[in-house]
Image (cartoon, rainbow, N blue to C red; front, side, top):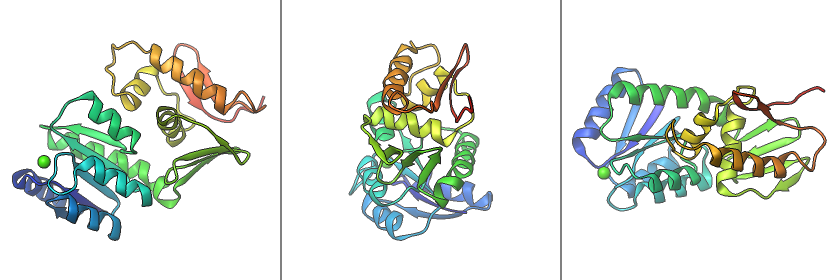
Length: 225
Ligand code: CA
């Protein structure tokens, strides 16, 4: 498994290189956004770890550039624990976030989870369920070939549900992963977004894919009835 780390702080870059190498990953390090962009796009990596504050091209611009051409899983690192950065990053297609400072064990757990999830993503950038197709590179979703007109947030929500199809996802999980809101936040925003997504995804079609599991959350799956 090959990982690219784009991080300008030498100590942290060395620490990540050493730690990940010790766990049998092959690690390349770029110390600025320009080298990072070149390697991320031209190289073959299973995962990218991108810092946000970088010289040359910042991590969000780099993320955006990579997402135009690749669906490689991306973990963003940021010292700026500001919700706008995270929301912006997720909209641009980051798969996960870690706020500095973090424990290496936490990073390793996230890396492994992304690689497990990314396995399917790597084989195909198009996720499918029944007549629904979600194209992660072009960032578009279709049902029976008809394009669904989704907002960035609705697309992120649908992508998460698709990546974990068949699994019941709690509102709090969706709130955390799509909106970066805390467990105790108002999950009404999730309900509203699910309603909007469902109106576009399911209402025009006879087979309903987005199911509500009372008291538990939501699951994307094909039901036979
Ligand atoms: Ca930095």
